[in-house]
Amino acid sequence: MRRAVCLNVGKLDYKRPALSWDPITKIASLTKHLSTDGADSATIVERSSGAEVLIIKEMALDAATISSLDSSVSLICEAGTGYNNIDLVAARERNIAVTNIPDYSSEAVATVVMTAILNFSGSILQNVVETKSSMQGREVFRMEGYQRPLFELRGKRLGLIGGNGTIGKKVTAMAAPFGLDVVVTSRSGNVGPGQTNISMEELLKTSDFVSFHAPLNDATRGMMGKEQFELMKESAYFINTARGGVVKQAELISCLNSNTIAGAFLDVQGPPEPPEIDDPIYDCPNLFMSPHIGWQRTESRQRLINMVAENIEKFFDEGSDSINVVN
Image (spheres, rainbow, N blue to C red):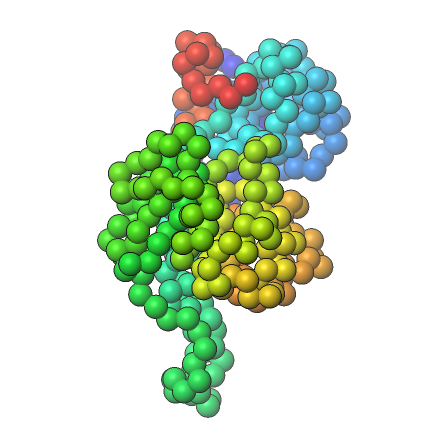
């Protein structure tokens, strides 16, 4: 039986409810470590000794670590979509295949995007907090001087950056019943049903909501900064469920503090993620954050384990051409 090691199982299985690892244990002897995040190279190499498969979730594997891995390692499974945490060149030089799971949580992430949009349109979170804290004077029920945004979605424009992928298409489908006009900016020019492709500049200038969906790479790193936010409407909102690195975070905070845009929702931050305890992001007005939960639905995480098992089985039975190898 093949030998597999999951180096940070705590990022996947929270025991509430516990997930089934049977799909993997049926095809491989599996050793699970709760966490190896932040460990030195020697610890990672030691825990990987003798394994043919390494399973990780958003854990950094740099060139030095990969070059020191046991010769038995032939497959690294990133249990997620993004793989910018792995040195692909070093893995290729060692003849180690790296796989990801491109479509296991698309609907869950799209739901987070729509939740953010619905919150912005009705100031839901602010109203919940203010209502619970204002019951004595009941001031919140008297609308005189009410300052929070309250508006309908029909006819508003939703701009998706890199939105012609699976998640963007899910968002588009969810947005349709609300009457949102969905536009995307795509270098390929290929768009899905209900989407119109326009330039990045036009998207930023005309959208009421801008949602980022492109992967983090050299081309997208820091793509959203002061220059881009200043193109947006003062009444517009920014949403990021992709990777924190696509945003120049300090510039976003500055733009929110100066009311350049109306608000932002970040399911991803940093780097680092989570932000440091003294990061000004925590005091920024009209900024909502969640702890990278877009992919974390129970069903999504179980699907992730199932698909990792499929990658392992196909790799050893059929070869690297049969699975999603990214290097």
